[in-house]
Image (cartoon, rainbow, N blue to C red; front, top):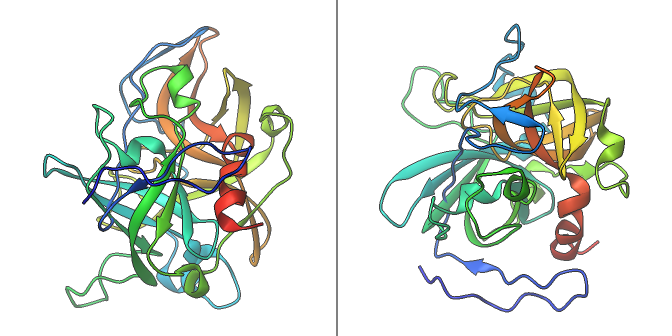
Length: 283
């Protein structure tokens, strides 16, 4: 692996330089810090009743729809430890995840990332891993170089990962809803996510459908979806139809407590990362 930076494409919208990696792998965290008007607990959040379900492999990979675009990242850090995160394909060879998935707690880029689309345990009766497609990550662009620990850094906790193959040609990729309000318009809207929580059966996805974004604050969009460690990087999306899923935000944190006594989980609205997605997607 090389930690050197490679010049990104010239653009007035994008001045960040991608980090190069030799191969691919990724992880999650729960929210641990304070923010204005809120306080937090260092615990994963299922809000009220646990409304998560396990979508079947056949359902996720059925032809003519986009759910195979959701998957799990396996990550190897520079110290040799491993972690996992979630991601979603947003182009032929690019995925969306959380920035803290591609760095360690000191902000150092991870050394290896592997992306497994529609990962779903093992084939029945075997020890053979089951997934729709797999690719390595060779570079990424992240919204922050600081491991997130407060509202300001969590608001930048997104990353676009570049894969070594056009995996999206196999899995498909999701589009995006309209944007331009900075994220404020998402508050109150219905959303969904597919991710890979650490408290779920090994390497199988969880889905929460029909939950809502509850408020926009400090550059973050907060939601009532049941997310736990491992779901960082999950694409939160609006369903127009099975073949028309549109990203709204990326989940990145759990356990937010507000001064009015309410609680929520958090993410980054698409206004923040879509310019970078469009730059590397090409449209």
